[in-house]
Every structure is written in C-alpha cells, then in structure tokens.
Length: 89
Image (cartoon, rainbow, N blue to C red; front, side, top):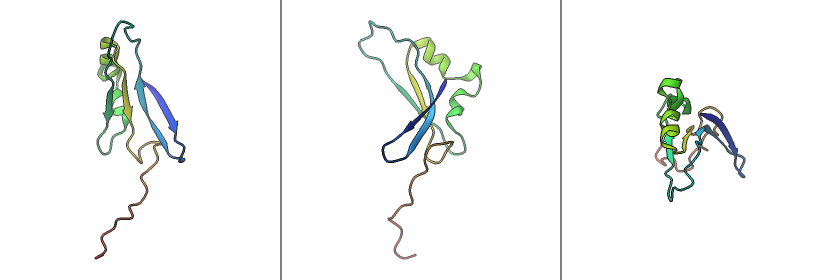
C-alpha cells in the first residue's frame, strides 16, 4: 500500500494508505473498500506485513482500498475541542 496525505482547504490534513490496482475496463461498477482502524492503531494495521496486507485482496480482486488514519493519529489533524460541554461542570 502507498501512503497518501491530503491537505484540506481549512488547513486540516488527512493521511493514510491506499491500494489502487488496475481496474477492469469492462467493469460497470467497482466497489471502494474504506478501512478505519480502532484505538491505539493507525492505517498500517491493514498493511502490517506483506503476508497479512489487505493489498493482497485489493490486487487479487482489482478493488481499490483506502485506509484512513483517524483524527489525531500519525499526521492526520486532531479534532477541534467541542464547544458543547456540559454546563453543570
């Protein structure tokens, strides 16, 4: 899988990994698999080793896969603090 980094117009950044295999030109529809890791992991969870990488499935089925880093992980911008705090605090 290849790393990617997208800089958004509001200054935020999204990072992750992607696999874009050649797609069958005859295919009418092609699914996109979007992977989102759990807590204490990052997008590399889906590409830990060549033997266990989701890229193998992506390549075999000719389906693009994107693994996004959650806010605050790697170089992905953290979420802003919430303005909806409990007023009784």
